[in-house]
Amino acid sequence: MVAVDGLLAPDLVVSVQTRPAAPPARRADAPRINRPELVALAVAGQVANPLVRRTAYRTGRDGILRVVPGTGGIALNKRVGDRATGLAADHVEPGVALRNNDRDSSGARDAAHRGLLLYACVGNVARVVNGPVAGARGTVTGKHGGINNVLVDFPTAVLRRLRIGDRVQITALGQGMRFPDFPDVRVMNLSPRLIARWGVRAHGPHLDVPVTHIVPAGLMGSGLGRPDSVTGDVDIQLSDTVLRRRHRLQSLRFGDFVAICPLDARFGPSRRDDMITVGIVVHSDSHVAGHGPGVTPLLIASRARLRPIYSPTANIAAALGLRRRLAPSPTPAAGELRTIWRLRPARRLARTV
Image (cartoon, rainbow, N blue to C red):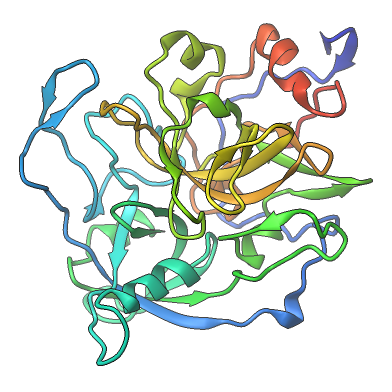
């Protein structure tokens, strides 16, 4: 046991994570959802090419030019559960990046792609429909705004045989989801499959939400000012080394669930006192000014309704049993527990495993 704010809390020392191949069972205490009202749509896209814009160089906030991998394509050796920082990369996306390049006789030029981007939700099941791994199943893990890619995780053996241009179809289900018992909690980009296994649970007037990190809203960068949060992400700037260490942000992993405070992403991300946005880390760090690991919003509400609960395995790879092992997530130090995690309504540290 350790003392936090004068109270006793469980010892948070956790061994390197290993997970069973099968996902955890559906939790009986998960919040009720409006399942009968939800509509499932089939949306599709093609495995996207990696893109290079104008120049091979990325100019860092330190003035250094770098040539490193970036967005698009198939990341053969990076998946959810792997470290999202400290890579020789910039905005790299784990797993597979999808775009829909179809043209229709009606609507805007990119209407089909925007349909894929809007309706796909984190946790949706994806299936390869052509090529050497036709029939292989994967999982939607996020949306990368700006470049507007939908990200899908597949087992490594599938990633190695996928081809650029292979078509992937997603059973899109989740937009429009709400919690009848918590009507003031905004839900977006989140599938029923994930909410049933994430570990979110009703606890009196609020929801306990497992996360790995609490991120101050003052660190958010690219993505602020966008008119919506259902088609992209907002970046965590890691340029401040002191805050990076204080909040353990160098340990962020692809697929981690994180709480951003105080941030209101209901109608586009903006700072608002007493609001919390919980999202999922979707792409890697960046040296470009204003950029960093991206977070796709999932849950938004006041601190009276959402309570971040520290869990070292609060990652989509663990929640859905996508991988057996995750990169280590260091335990919060005593100073972080006292000064950062105390922002929750209850000043006691809880832990989920």
